[in-house]
Amino acid sequence: MAIAHMINSGASVEVMKSLAHLMAHSPQMQQKIYSRHAQTKESALALDALAAISSKVLE
Image (tube, rainbow, N blue to C red; front, side, top):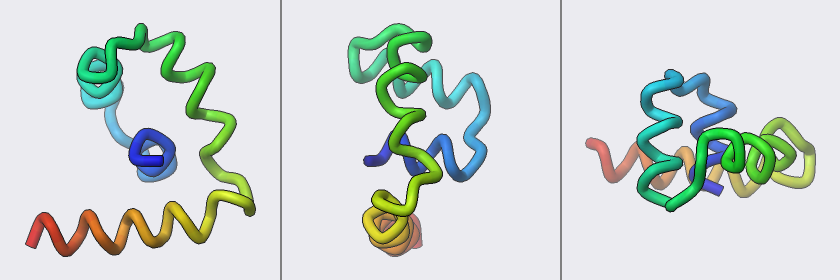
């Protein structure tokens, strides 16, 4: 879900490549797997909750 959140929030190509590396994915595999979860109604509540959690962590 963190990757879908990053896609939705417009993370840079460099950030997405770094996340793919951390997860042992190629950027292409990351896009294929996680972009389908981004921007869907089914994922909206979970992504909103993730955003709230991450903003508290970054404070």
